Picture 1 (tube, rainbow, N blue to C red):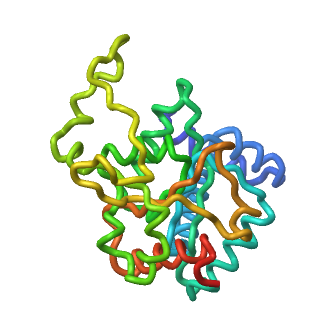
Picture 2 (picture 1 turned 180 degrees about the vertical axis):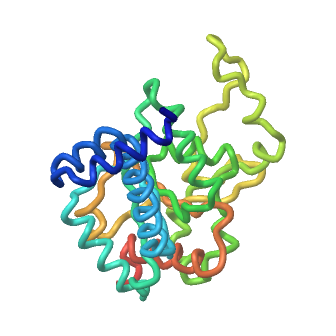
Length: 255
């Protein structure tokens, strides 16, 4: 008997069977296809829902080596959203404190993640401990604050500037340092970033943060190190305006 004839005969025979028997027969022969179809359907629905409900990021701050109080961070984010006049139906602000650079073998992957986010232009500002901030200054990651602060902001923050010697970046100085050598003869000397004295081309790219109490209640950084604020080099337009407002709100210059 031909295969098709056998299939038709079997199908006719199953029509007369009880529902439980027919269902068991169907499941035995088709469960693999059903599971695949269910998985694909779930994936499509989930992807569609995420796409329909996804909000644009109005502002994102990345806090590296930061420890947070979950309850107070939520309250701080809500208050910040209101003060920035964000339409929460369309946009959201993100204050990411998940990144930890510990000095062990996991740092490479973590740094790669930060680099990917910055390459995708997701991050507007970075706030971290002084040692970590210095690492990112060597790749020219931050804007020159003297070019973007208002006169009032410049006057208010000038005594808290974090300076780099931009001549070292222009000369490729940091690119030529062999950090892996056991005895590095061309390692950079310790630099006092609080002062432009002795720098060939001083540029303020950060601000040592004397945070307002509301910020300190929600976030804290490595013990014994000042937190430093910087705006990522590609930020402009509304994101730049919000970054500067965030600075003022974080430090308590405005309420």
